[in-house]
Structures are given as structure tokens and as C-alpha cells.
Length: 180
Length: 244
Image (cartoon, rainbow over all chains, first blue to last red; front, top):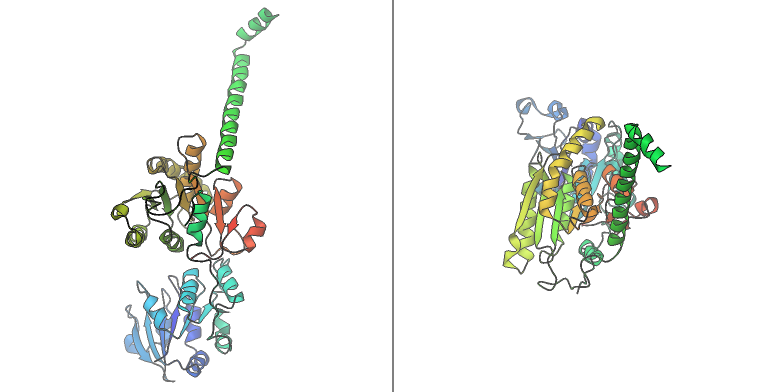
């Protein structure tokens, strides 16, 4: 079963949740072979209107199936979302540095959705650069459907990093030590 | 002629105060200028390593002090700490902001990993110190001046007893008072500390406020950035690539 994991981080980002739950985006996800969408909704309330009556208002999240056959799994917060990211086929997330770098580390395709309603979002500086390098796909809530149709979406480039010991060796050198 | 001058001075205590006040101010300026020049020369020259080899037991151990920031800064800091030799940095102190509850857990996780890599069974010794926070997220800039001064005073004892050879910081504001104190104690020759600042990977096009202050005031011996664009804007920074 292929999963799409959606995460909004520690704040609320209802525009992203709403965008993911639109029919067009759900259709695009299905055509990518995705049958389950897991949503981390944070403090937002956008999920409530999509949830069937019985599950509404539950703070522990829940699970339901939409009319076009997508299984939706949702929760507000979790101590560690690493497992969810690692098992997902595609990640759609807010453009936070932690989420971006973790997805790239895992080699997972990520759509970093910029919260264009937030003023002075300096976090997006990193997302912009990573998008330029082809490590992730950048989008806004309204452009999400277009981003899902990009051919490059599922093949992100790895991020070129300094060698593991670059910092340690640099520091030893600066301190006048010799590394053997 | 001198008698006349002495008479004039004795009849005017204000003139005496001005003359001695001026001399005092000049002496203070001179002392600090000398200290500053001496500091610059000492830090431009040899670092304490003196060509020793970094292997277990081959080099004199150093005292490392790392300031644990918050959130993403902590993650970046722990990634840096994991790559350092626990045998060379045998004496480690972590400074955590008082309000940061996650900080100590993160330190424990790093220490566990560091210890597992060391050949020395005594490598599990470390200290965790807490200091008041200089600026809470959202606090106004004016009030943060006062809280920064308070945080600085409270940090003096911490930095003094940690006595670091290397102070490793990566922001946010919590690390500034610690840097100022470490720099000042080094300036007056009571401590000998190299300050290493690593800018966050998030800063692609400009240094963070902490980075700018450390850069402009030349408080840090070394500033590392993770994107090449910053080297053009700030010629005195170093670049190694995106660090793990």
C-alpha cells in the first residue's frame, strides 16, 4: 500500500490540509498509485469538515475512507513522525527546515508547501534553495495539484553535503592538531 | 610658575577632577586597547594544538563547551558534536537554557553515542549547566536588552567554571551572553578560549542576528557557514559545504 504523508508541523496550516483534501489533489494522488493519505493536522481545524459525523471533534485523530476510495488517516501531533516519513511514498509538508532535510535524508520525494499567508517566512529561504537544487518540489496550497503533475516529482536529487568528518577535521586543523 | 599653577588647582577642585578624570579615562582606553591588540595577536597565531596528533591518548585532552540552543539549532548542534573525537574533547560541558526541557534529553542522547565510539572507559564524563534565557521567542527588542544583561551576569560563573578551550555555538540568542563572557575572560587573560560559531543551514542568503553580531564585533574566532553565497557577503567566514 502506497502512502502519502502530509505534515504541517507544530503550527496550524489549514490551507494545506484543505488543499490535500480537494477532489483534484486526491485524484492526482490516486494516479500516482497512492491509496492512503496520512495527515498530521497540528492545531488546525480544517480536517473537521471532511471527517464523517461520528469521528468529528476527536483529538486523537481517526481513520475514514473518502468517496473516491482514498483511505485517510489523521492525527494532531505525534512525538516522532520519523516512521511515517520513512514509510511514505510521497511527503507533502510545510517548508520547515527539519521536515525538508529529513525527507531529503530519507530520499523521499517532498512537496514543500509554502504558507503564503504568513508574512516574512524566512524558513522558506532554505526550501527555495533546496528546490533550486532539485532536492524537493516547492508549491503553494493553491498550486498543489500542478506540483503533483510534475514529471520530476518522484525522482528528487540527493543533497550534496560536506564529508562526514569535514567539520571535525576543520576544527582539529584550526586548533593546530594533526589528523592521522 | 608651578606655584601659580598649584594655587590655581587647589582653589578649583573641578579642574583637579577633570585632569585626573581625563588621565583615568586614557589609562582605561589604553589598557583595553593593549588587551585587544594582544588578544588579536594571540588568536591569529598558533592554536593550542601545537602539531599533536588526534588519536586516543596522543594529544592533551581539551575542554569543550557547547551551548545547546533550541529546536532545529539543537539538532544541528548534536550532529556536529557526534563527529568530534571524544578522546581529544575529553572534558565536555553543555550549557542549556533554563526553559528548554528538550535540551537535556538531547544531550543525553549525544553523550550515549559519543561514549559508544570512545575507546576510553572514562569518556562518559560530562557536565550540564543551565542559564537563564536571553530572549524568549516574541519578546520585544528593548526588554531583551535587560534580560540579556541578566543572562550574561548569570553566565559568568558557568563559563568561568567550564573554563573551555573551545566554545562551540550555533545560535540562537542564548549563546550570545556566553560568547561575550568567554571573549571578555579571554581578553583579560584569565581564560584562553577559542569561539567557534556554526551558522544554521537555514541561512542561505544572510547571517542570523547572532551570526551578524559575532561577525561584526569579531567575537568568534571562526564562523562557519553552510552555503557559499554567504562567503561573498562576509569575507571572514569559512565554508565547508552543508554539514551533517
